[in-house]
Image (tube, rainbow over all chains, first blue to last red; front, side):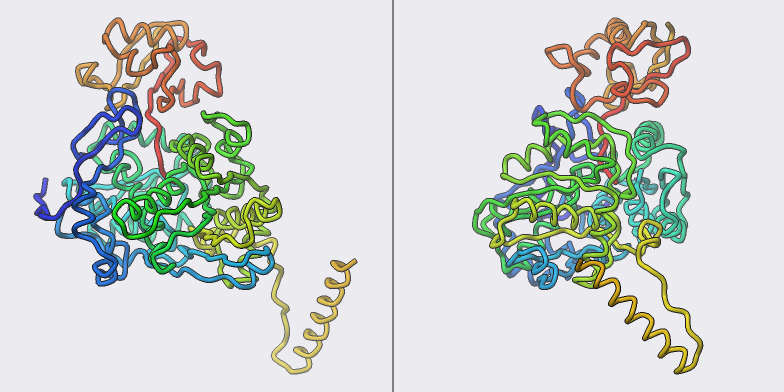
Length: 430
Length: 91
């Protein structure tokens, strides 16, 4: 085990069971021995408050590490590959279509290095893995986490093993292999991959970012809350719409807001939290709709593979949060997801993957149902990049016009395309 | 029925660090009782005071979640593999 020098100003105090409150040291463990509840990082908030001002954050790196006082690491050296500080874009054309006056898009489709929000959680998890002495890291993934873990492990010089379901999109498999990890494509769905990895984690001494490093990993998602607050001029939004897979991202965005309130960096105000699922894998929205406080697992069947978790670990917390904040959890069909991808691309110039299509489609649905008021400052979280899930959308985006390299051929094609456009317009207006 | 039970890290203090245990029982409920006889205290970790499985505990029989089978009444056969797995985040 390598010794990592500990920072004198570390704010991490340890881990605590979210269910029964049992305390544990800040080791590689994720489950309470007494009740199986998930463990969460505990901080010294007085120390954070003393160390942190808006100015000290602004003077920090242009990455998630400007918020390091809120992150569960203790060493001097963090893995900073430029993750975070992605654009928060004021939407005009999509907002107008949806009838919203203040819609913002948090665009993690352009996160670094691997084009999804997972770079946030992995940067934190691998920094902590190194502090805890791990030289081999691993994960179970629906794709984005695999890309990110493989990329950042390569940069940090850590050995890497990746477990994915065997039916993942080609872009996500290639976008993992290129970094040189050992990839295991498991015959089965994500929940089965996860079960296998849980058993592997118990047997081999590896740092699994989403298993034994989960208490550190999951905290990385809080930076999605911190950044939005800072980018809104140190104010919280009124309403958030974000995807729900395991439910971790959804709950941690809100935890980020709460921590900023706790240390006095933003004014306290309620933020409504609304979640998005694909109908083909919607155990959380089903439970929300039926008023249940437990999740019945499902077998996923949807094009939104990155959020196809049938047995979501933090699902009960996501339901609780949506209810407590007067939000909603909705689901949409695969056809609506494709329309959501196209809507975002054609109104805002952002090409998102199926999870983002799900989130946009749910945003639209909630607007149509009157569940988002037009004057609410609303932030929609786009968590992944469309180039990774091309199979899902390729039959629905049309074809280029093939022409010869002559003006005549071009003019003919142009005339034809204008006629087609007119016909389309006439059809839709009838 | 004689089955093999995979024990997660979080419970191995109770099994003398053993990662697997051989056990007999006609269904999951009986296996949990049998586990508790050989490793006293293990049932209280898996089940709440009402006797129901805790919400963050997952049981699998030959890789299938028992909630897709008959829950604690899921019938077992000789040689079945029963895994106990804590809930996992990720994606």
